Amino acid sequence: MFEVYCDSSFNEGEDSYIGCTVLRDGKQIHQSTTKVPGAPKNNLDCELEALSFAVTLSKIFSESDRDITIYNDSTEAVKVFQKEKPEIEKKFPDLSINFEYIPREKVNQAIADSLSKKFPVFFLNVPTCEVESFSRREDILSDIARNERNIFYLEKVDEKSTNKKTCYRLIIRTIDKILSNDRFYLIKKGGPGTQVKAAEEIRKDLSDPHFVSSMEAKGVRLENSYFLLTDETWGLRGTDNQTCSILPGSISHRIICDEVDRSPENLFRRAERFK
Image (cartoon, rainbow, N blue to C red; front, side, top):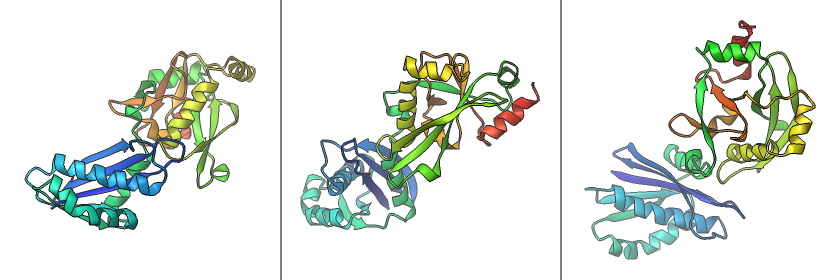
């Protein structure tokens, strides 16, 4: 049994993406997020491209499989491809391809939906840095505690978020006190991901001399600071332990996290004993 689950996310005025997951005998063999080609005008355009891409994936991964089922959660798009089935099979004479509707709530379709909404950070043209775990790093914890290093992290603000936008609060603090927590970023959902967009906006601010001066007036010290990766920014992680930072590459800083408890409270609790 060979199955492909595909979905898309239409982002008006921005890049749109296709998410696909491929299964053979119930086991996943492929996941991908792919930019929708051209300039789609609506959601249907994107779903049609998703189904077309799923056909291509079927040809690539099917090997000895002949009976293929491609799933999508758009009844309209599925009907279009059901009508085109004879013409499609002429191009792929070795395959029998069926197109079926499936609700988005089903597990594998939900995976495809999720993939279409979050373009992997490691494919984007953004700077990345290595992540360091602070759990067993006394040097990091003592540096934070004894040198009063500035810790940067983001906090999701639910009361300011909407169905279409996510609000993040930028918090800058030392082990003893908060230096700044009044900067908010309202980021449109979709496309490369809200966390990536938020990081980009913050890097722009931290590259602006006027903004930096206003932060320094509050006692913020950018050099030798830390960006704490929390649950709210876990989506910034890529591959090979690399992460997209919210601080510009021109500022000397490190990125830290804990694989289990990613809360700021955990970091400061661990650092407290090194004061």
